[in-house]
Amino acid sequence: MLFGGFDIVVIVLVIFVILVLFAGIKTVPQGYRYTIERFGRYTRTLEPGLNLITPFIERVGARLNVMEQVLNVPTQEVITKDNASVSADAVAFYQVLNAAQSAYQVANLENAILNLTMTNIRSVMGSMDLDELLSNRDAINDRLLRVVDEAVQPWGIKVTRVEIKDIQPPRDLVDAMARQMKAEREKRAQVLEAEGSRNAQILRAEGAKQSAILQAEGQREAAFRNAEARERLAEAEAKATKMVSEAIAAGDIQAINYFVAQKYTEALTAIGSASNSKIVMMPMEASSILSSLGGIGAIAREVFGDAGNNPASPPPLPRPRPAPARSTPPINPSTPNPFNPEQER
Image 1 (cartoon, rainbow, N blue to C red):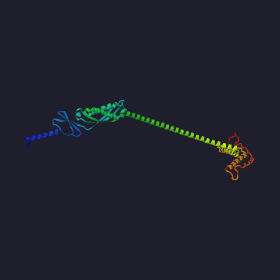
Image 2: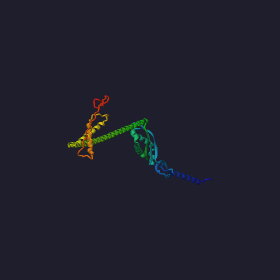
Image 3: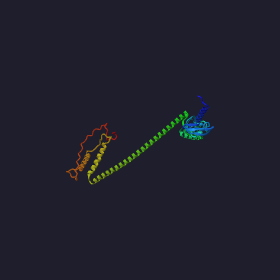
Image 4: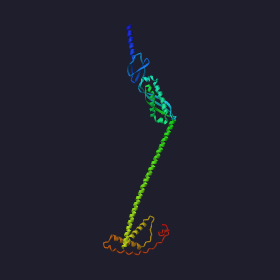
């Protein structure tokens, strides 16, 4: 099939139009910005979507990602304020806010941000002691973020976060810190144990004090009650003695007989209940015993009364009988003599 001159012209025009359309229509994806240059000079920035440019006059200069991006900062050696060498690595997050400034204010944007972050890490961490460095990581992150963000503002960049991932002191320094921590904990344990022992001793002393106070109060109360009881007993004894004395003065011989018999019986009871006496031998006259017994019997009859007797005239006392003569048993030298004070009972 032969093409004439007109057909060739038409085909060339169609191809030219396609090329013009292809060169003039630009599609920008979401999250990106394109810079447009006219004869090498920046003119505008294309937003996401379909855009038209002047073919063969304007062209796309830089394609920039405006989404937030992460940048890993490699491990580096840092000398702290107290001359301790530590290794630290970090991560930085940044976002392009102005595509034109990011494209034309700095070359190799990521490398610039990386070197700036590493430099400020050395500056910030080098101005702190090791203990402060290990315990104030949040303060380090805040200072790094403030310094780096201020430095990249002319580039149209916003640093959103700078985080220290890991801080590694030397191994010998880690061992020394572990020993120090162990010593501190042992010290605290000993202090707590001493405080507990002191509190226990204080509580025991307080308990002993309260016990002594209560015991003294009990003894005082007991002594007071004993004194009161002795006082009541003495009053009763005095009253009884007074009544017996009045009865004797009035000529009532039974009162003195009752009084003597009571004391005599109490004396015998005391002698018989002694723990160091097994056999009690003492001389006693039968007439005295019978007289005492007769007096006690008369008192009993007078107290309990008799229907045929007159209380005004008490019955005569029975005449005591002479006691039969006793033969004194021979004294055995081996037998203890209760009447010899030189011999042991």
